[in-house]
Image 1 (cartoon, rainbow over the protein chains, first blue to last red):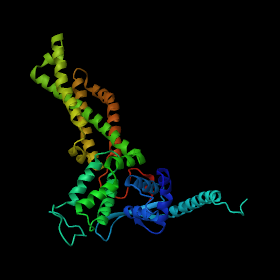
Image 2 (cartoon, each protein chain N blue to C red):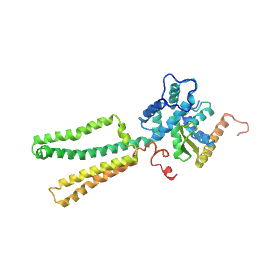
Image 3 (cartoon, rainbow over the protein chains, first blue to last red):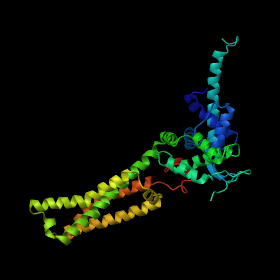
Image 4 (tube, chains in turn green, purple):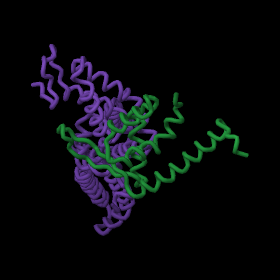
Length: 112
Length: 256
């Protein structure tokens, strides 16, 4: 079970990674994160949109209102070049953290 | 008339006609009553709620049930508004400062109109008795008169506003243009009133002393002008003009 802190901390890399697959909108982003995490990551709107706001302010993503095929309007988010760079950094950090922890939890005979 | 949404139920109509637009409007109004979410946020949240609703309906749920579940998933209005407020404290403070500036301007305007009203009425009705305040009895009457005429409406108005800013006023001040026009109008009234005061007080003096009056009042005008600038800068943007900008005065947006 993800703690609140972990959900908050992982929101940024998760959103950037999902948007790296292509543009998307709020509801679909939340659904995608939920499915990928087998229901562990359930973002509330109160959490999701402020994070998207911040990413937009940092110019990592851009948003645009558009009418979807259903006729309803939606705000579509997509990754910017800065966003891709930020995602690479995030990836390196999370992989490093993962690598560090797995070394401790699954000690291989070769290490040290 | 219940408006049909694109995914209209093919099998049967719900027994009680549930109006999605009405339900969403009520939900939006509740959310908007809390400080935090900007008009743009409300629009985003509404799009989210509609997506959630569309995904849920068509199953075994009635439209109303689907709406209730979708609304529940978005979260309680208070909580959602809180999260937005935490993320953007500016959005909470900007309206507060705006209303403070608005009240100061309104009070200034009221006093400059009110003082003239009082002077005019007093001259018209009792001439020097009220204005002169020669003996104590007249002075007391004079101050009672002032309190009634000048302060009571302010106190009542304060109570009225304390119950929440009425929608009429918020609607009137919903765009920068309107705030600018209203503000300029108020400024002109204030200007006229103060100039009038300067002129009437210079009756005993020479004509040229009017210029001195202007000098005395110029700090007041500077104050009012800066107050107006502050109000226009902080003025709420209408939902249609805020399509692309999330918050007023964002640097990155200007460059984009």
